[in-house]
Amino acid sequence: MKKLWFKAAIASFALVTVVGCNDFGDMNVNPNNPSVPNAASLLTGAERNVGAINGQVGPGGANSAPALYVQHLSDVTYIEDSRYKTINFNYSGWYTGPLNSLQQIINLNTNDETKTAAAAFGSNANQIATARILKAYFYQWITDRWGDIPYTEALKGQENFSPAFDKQQDIYNDLFKEWKEAVAQFDNGPTVKGEIILNGNIARWKKFANSLRLVAALRISEADAAKGAAEFKSALADGVFTSNADNVQYKYLSDLNNENPLYNNYQTNNRKDFAVSSTYVDYLKKVNDPRLPFMASKNILGEYRGVPYGVFPVTWKAQDISLVAPTLSAQTAPINILTYAQILFAQAEAAQRGWITDDAKTLYEAAVKASLQQWMGASYTEDAYTAYIAQPDVAYSAANALERIGTQRWIALFFQGTEAWDSWRRIGFPKLTPAPTTLNGGTDIPVRTAYPTTEFTLNKDNYNAVIARQGADTQYTPVWWDK
Image 1 (spheres, rainbow, N blue to C red):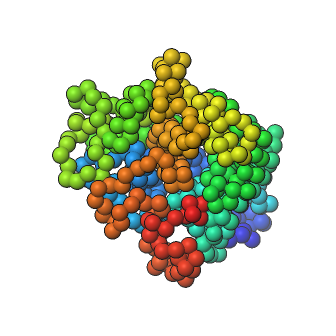
Image 2: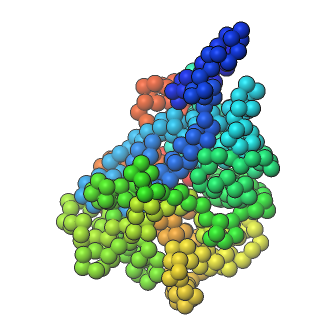
Image 3: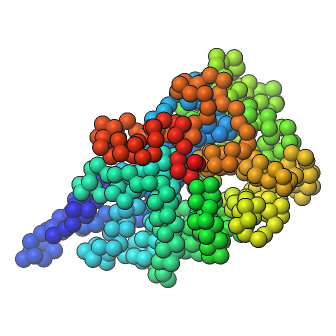
């Protein structure tokens, strides 16, 4: 008898399993209806949501919010999101979408009834390891935004429609375990099919997982420094990114169904809802940052002018301000998932904290250089880097190390809104001024997104329990690692 999860998997993906009486052999088996879900299609579908985490759309909706909070972007016409109007954000689409798909891949390749058939899409071990890495990646993104979330009791289908909330600290501890075990699980079997981010390259997947673990370890530096330092050093020893060639991106296509979300906003729908914030543009102009042309477009007068952040009423038009540059808003423009510069900035901060013995200044300068090379491409020159790094507001200062690292990381993480917001929440740099007038009843920049309202109505007991433990369900209750 098929297990409940298997029935749920087939129902959720509208795949009909035809099971005939054993007496009739294969007479009742329809060759056009697969008996198990297509694991390759499940993986491709899940990976298509990776770009949405840093873009403007996705199953959770309003994924531009962190980029607005950290003032990379601002509203152009409807000045609401940069004034924090939306308080409750829905994460259910991430559970029913990519997380569910990844869990099904793990189940299909684990269960004795289905793993032989599932092996047609790559070795069982390689499929499970890939799914575990991505599943942990999605879960980290969710917990970083909402704090305590359904985790151990989630993705159970009919078995549990009202999952309890796990503590963020426990979730992080399990994420470290998942990334480590997944790396060890890869084998030399057939390449995973349907894998569109790294094309099934096992060596790159291992390095990606180790690098994710390194960044996650630094995330808990203020909440559990001992655990963070241990995981950081372990990830570093296991092998992380060593050049821009290791950068991981989600690459969009010349296809209406899989085009860059900002292109969709700017061109397909001709809306131009977001532009580069004046906070960001003004700072890059102040330090003569050579990356500016690769992040922002000039306005109609041929100038770089950011849209005033959170200012209402509107006194400008779209042609007056700088939209996001074509390097990020073209139809096929890729979105960064994790970069070498991020890894170097993490190492620089770890050195400054005494977690590793390397020189913080050397690592910081290498991080800035890697970011310039990443953004400028063929336009990069050593002269440009030398002039840039020598400026008083850019040069490394031991007395202001976290400010320098945090500010440069903020620049480098343009269009990686959640990562930039996470860094800013944790160390407080750069110093940002909230919107002049807000729409959420507060006066500060949000440090969390509130739970979807459905948790209160459909999972009330567990919702009340997590609020009693974590704090009020507002945008100003910090998550565990931010305390």
